[in-house]
Length: 117
Length: 113
Image (tube, rainbow over all chains, first blue to last red):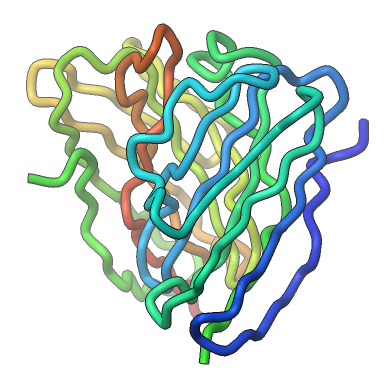
């Protein structure tokens, strides 16, 4: 079974620029999550999709971050404009359904490491 | 109070040692608990789920104390390859009808020869 695919692996941008990350979940997984992991901290949930609908974006800084999952499969996360404090690893995860994460946890992609200078 | 709290460590132990990590959580309604392992510059990977009765997987034993809202992970006979950060993960309740997982900041383990 192919894992969660993310690209790019690394990105360096200047502050106030924009950036986009892409995620393709495991085939058939209905639930997709974007997490932000700042160095030395645990992953923090930014947004959760069930198919193509958002079920939780309470911690997404909506003034600069946006995400979509238009066809209920792959997803993009965008930051515009970026700030220095956005430097982090952005992790995408998927699970077969929101209820199964209750029992089995998530599978993460390898992440995108963003550096804002 | 943080939703999931862990001692950040690092725990520096010799090979063959037994080491235990603890974690506390704030949401008494949480129903699911996990330990994830994260190697340096890698993504978190599920190590094991934590069941009410406690569970064991080889050298790893997980325990849950609901009354104290406390989870533990015991590693016996530590190997060099066990060096990593161990993340305590708790079901953070239901939002919009769906569960979400809350991650602690992790405990770093360094096993030396």
